[in-house]
Length: 342
Image (cartoon, rainbow, N blue to C red):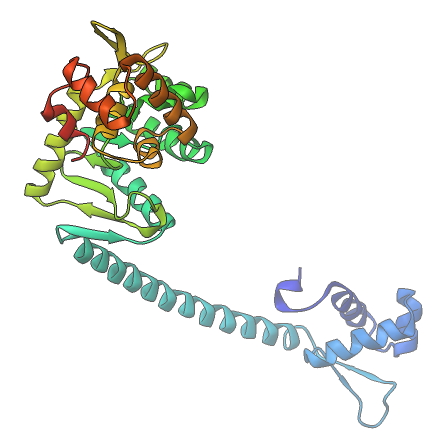
């Protein structure tokens, strides 16, 4: 039990024997302990360093014992002094840690007091989203463009979403119709609905957006490059506009279903919202790559949809297909068309 004082077990054992037999020479101590002489000398050197023994200046084979009331008491006092000094250092460190925490909190509050907060990098964005989700009390609204959800996105969002739902937060989420092409994404969306969230899909969405309690919104700086960062808005003017945009999209979206997205009846057959959007974008001159990105599908799928629509319309060009679709009433109103580009 002397190890806390810096006395190793074998050193303490040698010292304990010397307390009972102070007349022992190193050789006699080695014989008594049945240790090699080298080990005994090493233990005695350590005892001398700790001021538990002294070597006789007249006879180097003679050991002069220092009593425990002096030697061990001195070690105890030294350790207590070190412990008190360490406690003082910890107390000072605690004060410094508290000061840094306060400074960081003040800096964060100052940064978030502005109407626009800039987030840089995926890690900072995810951390801020977690903070906003934990602070959310009433409603959470979101757009999720991009088609199917990655496994990492599903894994990262699941616990955050579940905690909000457990707190009674009303969650409304809009995905692209193209998630129906990815069974894992559909299962994720339906799982949210089963837990109490309201989930809908639509053919095309504005950029990704998260709105918390109608008071703060997270929007990417560049919708095409997530790593570019995000902006957190909180001003009443911008929030009113973003919430209004969400409500418009939400009203025209369809609830998540057990099959494919809803198709609208026309005099020439059924037409899905995705097909209507393709016609609209083709009529406005967008390339296959841009149309595919807006719908969250592959370019190959986009070209297949386009070819099928042109055949059904009897059109020779994409522009002609757009005009023919308007003539036949296949496209919605101009207001509907504009909404997808807000």
